[in-house]
Amino acid sequence: MNKVKKKIYRNTPAFTLMAWASFAFFVALILIGLYTLKEPLMVKGYYLMGSVGLISSSFTVSKVVRDNQEDEDNYNLLLQKAAAEDDTNK
Image 1 (cartoon, rainbow, N blue to C red):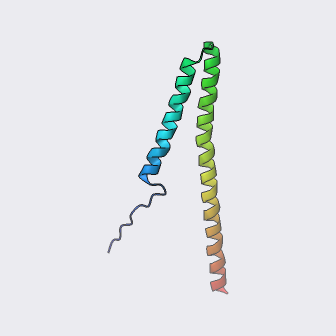
Image 2: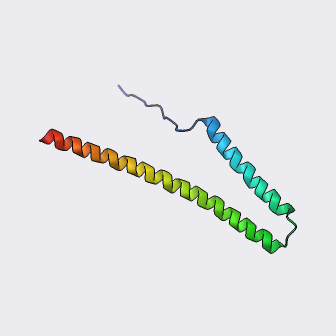
Image 3: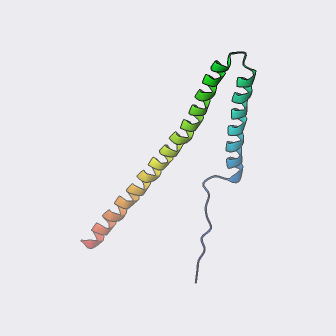
């Protein structure tokens, strides 16, 4: 008999919506702040570049941290399986 497993999500849809909504809200605040800033275009461009760099590097850092944690968990699981196989072979 074919068993179909239901996909389990780590985050609820409400939490995912809240995360993306807050991201969009704060990006909008940055853009509104830059638009209303009474400085030359060069200064606004500098702040915009810094903001975009900060946002993109935040995504990258969170992905790297998550991937490293998952790799560590997988490595520990692999070591446990190898140790269990060694114990059964003795």
